[in-house]
Image 1 (tube, rainbow, N blue to C red):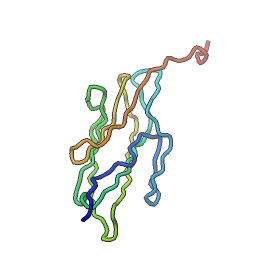
Image 2: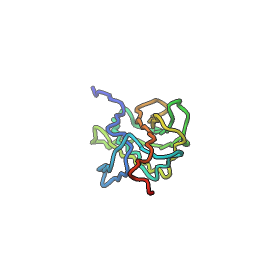
Image 3: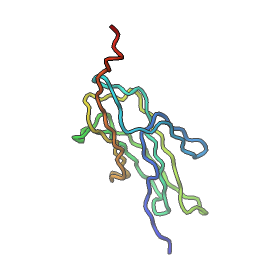
Length: 144
């Protein structure tokens, strides 16, 4: 009798960049805090990297949704939907998929806690925290 283990998130991270090279997930600069000197704070480019493992009980069509929200749960950008079709080869016990979502010009109108929530078929699976902090320019960086 086969043991059913549901979909598993191996990696869920915000980073500077990510690549998928022959199903190897490569991450550069994972982070959880953005420091800005003024508002709105614009983060020029980042990536969301996900590595999901599926088992035979997960076969079929699924929807991975990413919601970027502030501390009040309000969206700071439209949700990102990723349709996923899971079909395991006959000789496989599991299937791993990498997902990389590149985000350009991510805008924060206020400092504080944010999260990138990962849902599978509408059910919460993970939450990636992000803190946005305002740091005033240092006196040594000011030009007379």
